[in-house]
Length: 411
Image (cartoon, rainbow, N blue to C red; front, side):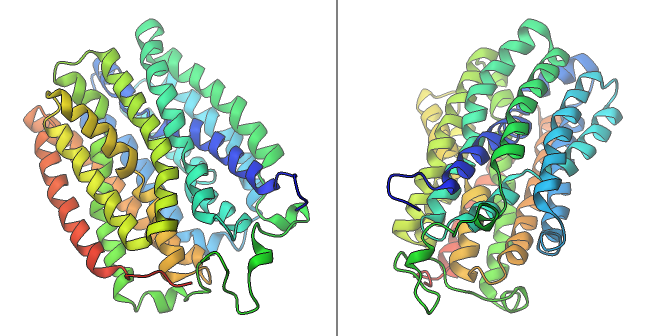
């Protein structure tokens, strides 16, 4: 790392951010834009349509459970190159779906491919490249989901109005291909050694394996972590918290539309919220560095609660600001809090295995969310009842994390 020369790891972060922007930022964070038009055109219930997100979460959960084992046995970059082609192809295929079962089949294939270029994988890759400023680097990579959603929610909404949802799937898939393929093929590399480099900040690491910058300690194995109460507290709490967060942001556009706001305003509101999410991810990563794991995690959950309450009272103008605030700092729990909690509490010794299991817990919560929210709407004609449940779960999560997480990070 010569003076004045940009470390290659930052190019990896930028490429990861771009890929996440047009994959997670669209596939997950723009999904709500398709709910009403597809259901109206195809005669699906919202619960049936929401099952696509449940399937995505279930596949991610299974992949996360296998990630520690799988990451040691595959040529990751080759798999990512294949996924870079397959993900846009399967997303394009949605435009030809003629019934709900075709949607489900496409979603299954898309989900398997998507997992190989998901934030779970990029968290691991960025972690390889950075010893110093790892939290900030992860935050910058994951902010792509917010940037992509901020831009694409409005774009997708207007495209659906102008040309219909089938054309929109095709056009967005082409954009996805044009961004993902160059980034994965030309820029992303799994480890610094692939470019003949050392991890960023490796020169600051002492002979004892600790760093001047507070980099996570060497850590424990998965077997040792499973014997620690904090592991199960984090795992079980994350199920409920991620379910609440997913219910919150995945229903943002249809809920605002249901409560008297125009489709265009709902899309703009979603875009603004996702812009706040992009900024919030970097801010939250910085908060972990400055405030420590427990304080930062609790603050993120409190922000989630504020956002959920804003959704319940969304007809009041002030609640719109609460929603934006809640999405900005609250909806980063899975992407930011979980990998950093894993690093700071359990260390890097067996990171892939431990993070994989905790990520599977977040996937379980994400899998429940679309089913519950869709069923709630079909029964009550409103999402408010499930928001009330989500608020109660979030309060419980705040209390548990405040008690279970250590006061000070190891390092």
